[in-house]
Image (cartoon, rainbow, N blue to C red; front, side):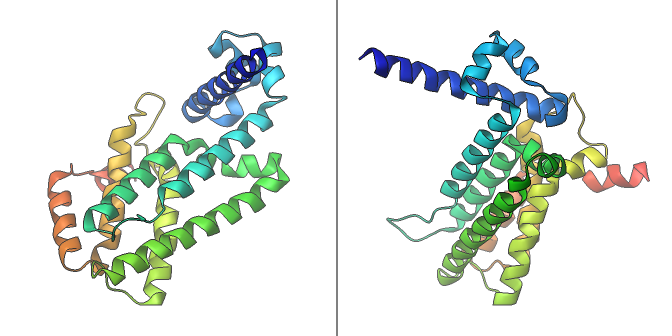
Amino acid sequence: MVWVVLKKKTSKTKQRILDTSLVLFNEQGERAVTTNHIAAALQMSPGNLYYHYNNKQEIIKALTEQYQQQTLAMLALPTDRAVTANDKIIYFKALSEQLWSYRFLHRDVYGLVEKDQHFNQEYAQFASNIMQRVQVLYQAFIHEGLMKMSATEMEALIINVWIILTNWTNFLFMSGHLNGHNHSQEKWSLFALRQLVLLESPYLIGESRQTYEHLLVSMEESNLFAKVSQSS
């Protein structure tokens, strides 16, 4: 009984370390955050942190595994019904929010590869798994008469969707939209969702097109291009 209680307490502490590390990595950048910063934010001693994770790389590895498992689970097809036009929006919204929640993994990807030789291979495999999962989703939407595109168009669309999602934070930083004071998740996730909706629009038919048109009307204009143009 005592062993079970200790195991649960250890598990909760490990998750607290991951949650706090994720916030710090996202807000300050992975390179700027040390294990001492993480321990201080948690109000625990560095020794206590090292009891759970030997170094920062172990924390990053655990966060990467958590992110990958969650993301793949989000893209599962419904098992008890056919897909609908609303499902497309739900998938995109969940995916854009997920990548925003773990944005440091994509923003700092080159530094992470330099520090861990296995990260590049694991990341490439994860990206492949994601794109295969999205391909299955698109095939289901085509089967239900919600989309129409060729195999070549589907491949290009999937790659472009992944490029936008994984580089969205870098674009926001480099174009001057995002800084250390405006990390509002909902706003930037919705802007990413809007880009994805517009990217898909040529391939939407029937109920799916009507649903997306209603969604676009309800969404705020991003004016992202105006800001980029002004800064040039």
